[in-house]
Length: 434
Image (cartoon, rainbow, N blue to C red):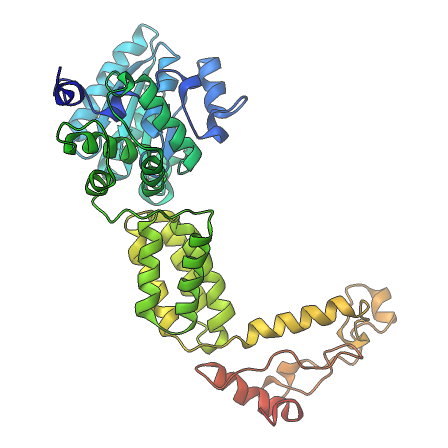
């Protein structure tokens, strides 16, 4: 028997389908949903059904979990792909559901990529879900708050799936090599160091990982061992050993941050690409950019922070691979922006004083006076309301005694130069030499 004939039989389904778990105890990952006393395990134990939307990245188990829940009931399952189905298909299933209800049998409709259903398709489904004609399970990689109409969404419980961890992927890969009808016979050698590369390049996507093994087998030309060159070709990328817990990971992140801080968008985008190709989570990068927008750009360009926050929200909503476009926009903007760490330095100085000095007394004129007793104690007395004065400013003491006003020193760059100009006018003795 030739090795090729063993591994590449055209009659067999893909590896990801062959090793799909058939019971909940065999499912790996998503412990927050499948663990003891968690929602999916309780649904399976109680054999109860209600409409669910599985929201998460590709290859994290949305379809598998939906099927496992249904397997524990006597419901009849129908599956539709939102890409290739229309209102006519929905109506046919609803009609069959009504027949099932007449004999006391539940019907579950599983819709893959429900975010691709049009409003009219979702409207056609709404009444059947609302009156209990059928139970709907939907799977989506997009935020259902934006892609599913509110009346339908309000009748569903949204279950959020997370990218699978490296340990999860390693366990899934081991299960495949131990139990698959083809891989489990020992004909295929997959060196441990290349398994590690594969897991890291899969980015939490089990289907991508297993499909890569399938493709690698087809590229081996009869050999019994997966080589680095074969794996690289199967991944269609320059495979790098990007260890998210090792020194190299932190070195790359450091190079990325320092390139943005150093106003070099070309270098920043390059290190961004290295991180993404290495399987770095885009949310991690987006969080670093939000911090950098305040730490290194600050008030020199105050638009940097809201842009970074919007970028983080968009990355979370969109996911990879399109999230790379959003990260590139935020990265290049911050790299090209005027820089100032004045606000960052100000909080460091203020925190140092707050730690080193005793808890200060708040000046009487600054204290709150919500009750008559507090007013009798002169809380808030002689406070000068700035808006009652010219240019909405009046010189006043806002710091407690013994605290020097030495914290915020704006730079002369970007918008911060306008801040400095106003502060010099308001507090000339404090900022006259700045």
